[in-house]
Amino acid sequence: MGCGSASRRPGGFSSSEPMRLHNGLCRNCTGAGSGRRYSGRARGTGADQGVRKIHSLNCVGERSLDDGKLLIEQLEVVTLPTTKSDKLPVRKYAKLNQISIHNWPCLTECNQFDVGIVVSFGALLSDALIQQFPYGILNLHPSLLPRWRGPAPIFHTLIHGDRMAGVTIMQIRPKRFDVGPILMQQECPVPPRCTSGELGVILAEKGAEMLLSVLKSLPEHIENKWEQSKDGITFAPKITVADSWVNWEEQTVEELDRLNRAIGSRVLLRTLWMGKTVKLMDLVDVEEIPDFQADTQEQLIPGTAHFHKESNILLIRCKNGWTGFKRVVLKKLLSAADFYNGYLHPYYQRSPAHQNVARFQTCTPKTRINKMSK
Image 1 (cartoon, rainbow, N blue to C red):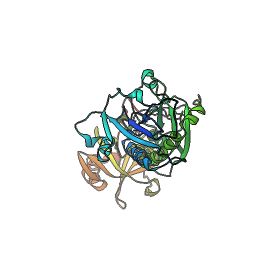
Image 2 (cartoon, rainbow, N blue to C red; image 1 turned 90 degrees about the vertical axis):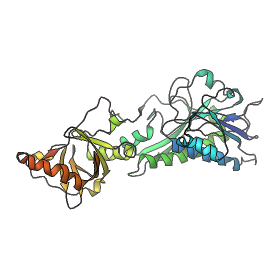
Image 3 (tube, one colour; image 1 turned 180 degrees about the horizontal axis):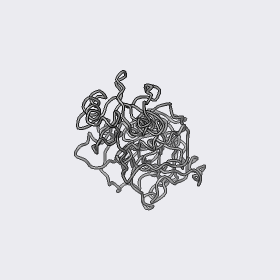
Image 4 (tube, rainbow, N blue to C red; image 1 turned 30 degrees about the vertical axis):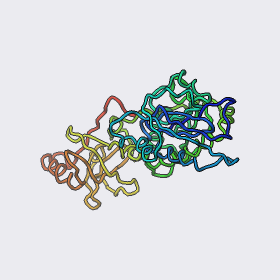
């Protein structure tokens, strides 16, 4: 999401002169520094955070250092070329705020920069590129590295029930992701029942302030950097549709709640009904699931569906209890009552021998989220 650079001058990096920021190599960019221009990259998840960071860094022109000097003199942005500029939040923001925009790849001026900044950029950077910056290239990563290395740390933080999230600012190592030495790291408690979007906003705001703090005293932070621990390494692979398929036999009520809060706003949870895909919407909070006493042991088998008329909720049995949804998509959007009238009730009438038992099927795609040890 962010990048920038400070202009090169003899004698190294000085906080007494304002920085010119060049946001290069990125779709979504931010940058700040002192005395020189710097450039970085950003792409993929986190476009919204990138906009926020750019806003913070652009506004820092109004913030002064302790001696009254401006921290940033100039901010520039590099994004992927596109005919639909409104699809790239950072490009749109830069245009609205009259920030210079360059199309990626744009490497001709890298030797004018002091430091690069990258956030959520899914490409490996070469050693030759990194060496063009006297202070290297920094990466702002929304996790407590080495936990959740990879492109989707916020999603996996929620999926795995972490109570503590955080932000790490580190130096980029060539040809590798999220393994460099740490300049600053701060914890952030995960609010109860928050979504990935909500947590992303919290971490973006914290990260923007941390980035400004690092840039105000960059040489000191680089001098005091520390290597990442070799213990506690976990990975956060990209979320795909394959991760949204519910496994009724293996997933608990709590796990489905966390999965929905993590990915539900982007990819709806889904299951199978008579071999057809059903998308599940409006998951009911665990505390609001109505009490339902099964009449037979067959009704306790995972995947079993029951329509709770009093609350208009479609209950589905999972590994350790009942979860509920208020709407589904099967060819079209249906309320729980619509699904009962159009599918469950006719099924019961056709199959009286099943004792009012109907089940969703588990689909097991080749690629699913792997449970990782904490």
